[in-house]
Length: 288
Ligand SMILES: C[S@@+](CC[C@H](N)C(=O)[O-])C[C@H]1O[C@@H](n2cnc3c(N)ncnc32)[C@H](O)[C@@H]1O
Image (cartoon, rainbow, N blue to C red):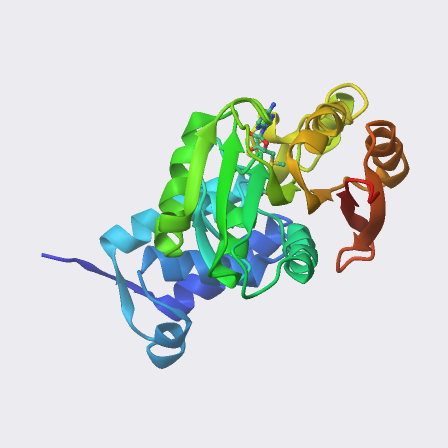
């Protein structure tokens, strides 16, 4: 039998928001609301309709665990094991980078390069949750794509995410190092590679440093290791009229442009993210 506590949903939410605020958490109210909703298996509308509904003992102890984890710095998305990206729902796990809103600019730019009514092919290098590939396949119904990653566990989640987004019949996931085992050429190659300088990882916020996998963050001593490797493999992965759309870390535009041009690619443009940071570099093979 379910035991009810004296605590209502609304009371639980207000108490949690207050403790998060006291604990120095930035989005205290939002985080509290999301965690109460998750613990009580209800949505925003249920919270508004039935603020006085008493929560059960099980819900209360789940909420206490969520509170403890959040106060130790774990992001809400990690506690819930999911994150919304491009309006779609993605499972994330300990081996998966938590997809960032900044990366949505890559999808936006890539969509301008992919015709709606043609059978195009996409390669997503370092697919993680699969968010970039899956968002593109969701928008371009005739497209097919491959997502690769060096981490097998994140590939398993990407596969599940493709099923949830109903694009699994057009997505293939491959385990390996960048272009390893990939012999085709593509209309679009997209990638958000690891680009944080190794020494800077210790300086990241605990939410990132302690919870995002290091394989997804570390770009080696100067942050450019993955870009060097991508510069070498991209020319052989692009169709003659294809494009590469590659995420940049803040301030890396000049270095990455030099690396790509040195490998024989033409850099067309770099689009800013919503925060005004140059983020999505577009490159292609030189036109004859
Ligand atoms: C910054 S994360 C990006 C994940 C996802 N595409 C996104 O935007 O949220 C980089 C991804 O590259 C993968 N990765 C790191 N080194 C790799 C390599 N040498 N070959 C293939 N994937 C690699 C990591 O496991 C991680 O999933």
